[in-house]
Image (tube, rainbow, N blue to C red; front, top):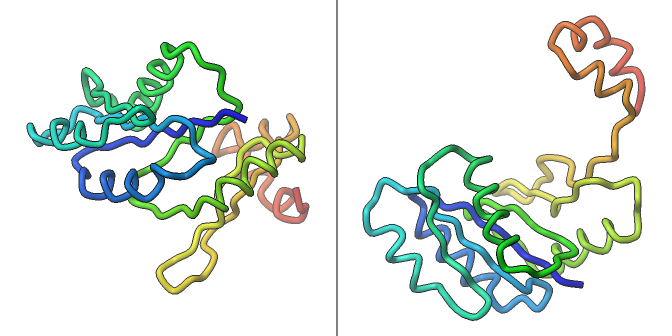
Length: 164
């Protein structure tokens, strides 16, 4: 199994450096891509470049086009490496993820075809769960209900009465 992680940085080099140093030796991760999303601090990219290694790439987007743009920039770079990856993780730098959490997510995705997206269990500072970590592939009807705010309001009671 070949895996990569894309970490989007924007004016948060301390978090990014801490996170990359936490995960750089994880055997489950083959490639780490740090995308500086055109930070406003002129030294940000230079400081991040110190992270470069055979496993870690540090690149800079040509502009700050937002979260999606920065992640897509990283995905395009990853594609240019001409490697086939089984899993690609997109992550913010202000998190802590034990290696076992990546392993569990990848295993869940491999073994359960109904799971489309997976994330480690997220905890608040008190250790309490704060949101779901896996999402099922939704049925077309649910997507139609969620396609507009009006549909959500019209079908709210029906939607809430079902455990979908």
